[in-house]
Length: 290
Image (cartoon, rainbow, N blue to C red):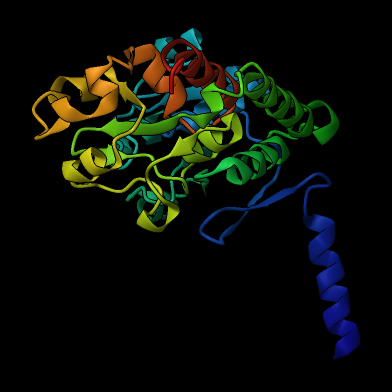
């Protein structure tokens, strides 16, 4: 019986394509591909940017409404939001794989329709490196010219941004507001990790989680030297009670990022180096007497 079983396994393996790919995603699900996918739908901006950073943008045939970089992506069909995209629109594109977040609610439905799904969700710097390697494997790109090379460039560029700051600027205590609520970027988030590498002090401790919703009074008590925020978030900031007494507000040490800059700094993907430069420029401009 053992010999028969071994023969059956050998026959099965012989039937598999010579270059089949197996990728285990962030759900712990292993997905097998007969060959590297040529038609990709991506419904998470950081994954869209990862594929393009690996110079395989041409394989993407559809995206979510928030994927907007690089510019060529904006010409592609839009299949709705990332968490709950339009199933019919995705099916119509005949994708070899759909890239999405673990939190997306359509994985099982797509799989029931015979569409392969890969859930990858970077949340910190280590995750970005890991996800880039997974994408490189999916795209059948050797690490030496793909994910590893790309990560070395990102890492070196973040370090260069840190080195550009003066020792005085690195004493700055920073509050980073991600969105209205207020929702903040804590030390445990990828934004918090970038701030730490830049050498500044995040007033939101890791114990509160990566992106906690906080009481505005917390920021008043912490009294940061510098505030960073997206432009849409800033519209509500003036109404937070007591914020007129915060040092950063009184001294106008606030960096309000444009919509384009916000897209860069709040996405854990290959543009992290650009995000570090944007934040370092803010610190250098605003933290002179920090």
